[in-house]
Image 1 (cartoon, one colour):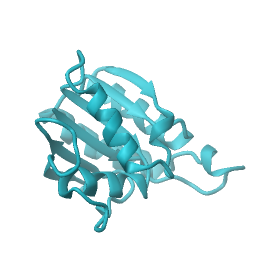
Image 2 (image 1 turned 120 degrees about the horizontal axis):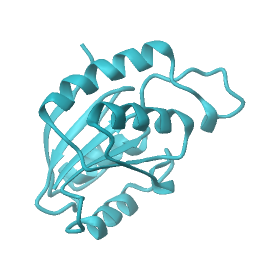
Image 3 (image 1 turned 90 degrees about the vertical axis):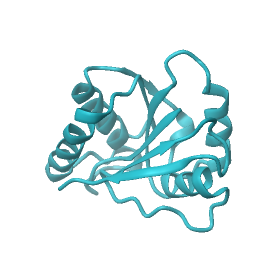
Image 4 (image 1 turned 180 degrees about the vertical axis):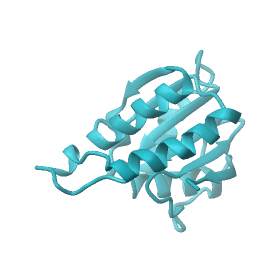
Length: 156
């Protein structure tokens, strides 16, 4: 199973709430640059994303560049979600049709803790993914400590 953990692109702060923060123009450009390079080598079958505006916008851009794989909003991918619950959910998804190559579009601190939990089996050293960065993981089965971090994709 290939799991691509993407932190949303750079978002502005001029919004009535954190949930409604949109991507900036620079965030869109940097994200598109990285996603085009990534997509020349990798295809995903499904993109799960948090319901926050900036992750919805990021997932939509990712979907367009990827040729429109299925988009699925997942409340489990909000910033304050518990990494172990996400790992358990990934375990339930494993083996289902269309889950061999999936992307999760989410936020810090979840994405940092989730990357660490999947690759190291704990959350003591969260991966410091910046906006618009993508962690490429490979796992025979998505469980704590069983994934390998292949590469962190960055714009530029």
